[in-house]
Length: 251
Image 1 (cartoon, helix red, strand yellow):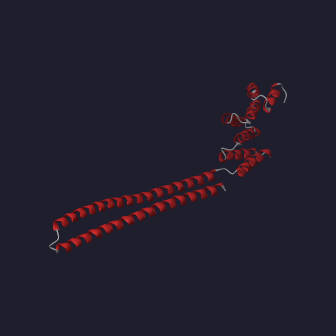
Image 2 (cartoon, one colour; image 1 turned 120 degrees about the vertical axis):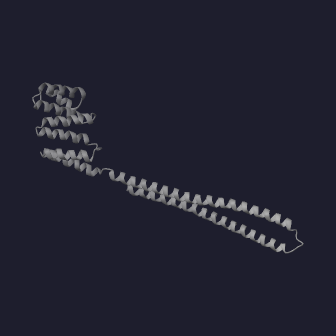
Image 3 (cartoon, one colour; image 1 turned 90 degrees about the horizontal axis):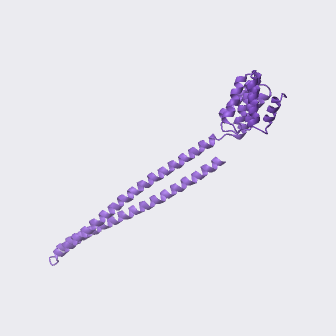
């Protein structure tokens, strides 16, 4: 619905721009037509004036000198008007061309904006599909298909890198490796979580999982140090409570 509304808005903008351009173009055409009529009228007046003078030349009693001077002045005036009107015509022609160029540029810009909006809308993730993908990966873990769960969560991270569930997905990858007894990979996965999302709610559990891996590998001293880090860094969390119990010898 948002994309459709955006396209409707862009359509009306384009129509408005096009209508404004057509209105300016019509005014330019009218101005050009009016100037051409004036030029034609001036030329016709000059021709009539010349014809009148030629007729008067046949009358010996007419003051030819004065008429010739008047004719010269009239012709000069008409030439000046024609030059001015010709310049105006050229200016209007340029303006008309500029209007076409400007309108085309604005239409192209609007088309580009519409295409960009379409691509952006297409790039937005589908929340339902995102949730479905996360739950499918988690269900694989719950039924004991740990390798399939790892692959599914890795695919989730690739498809939805901006999801709010990325830290949780990384945590379950580490947990799946732990379940497969691949403790080195489990530690690497949880350390990635702690580096990329240190403020995640899953960070205390990730560090606790690292301690478990170290204990399984026989690194008792390192495991205790990690448990102490859980208590120190994440006091008041369930992970910190479990770490305290392990440090006191309780499981």
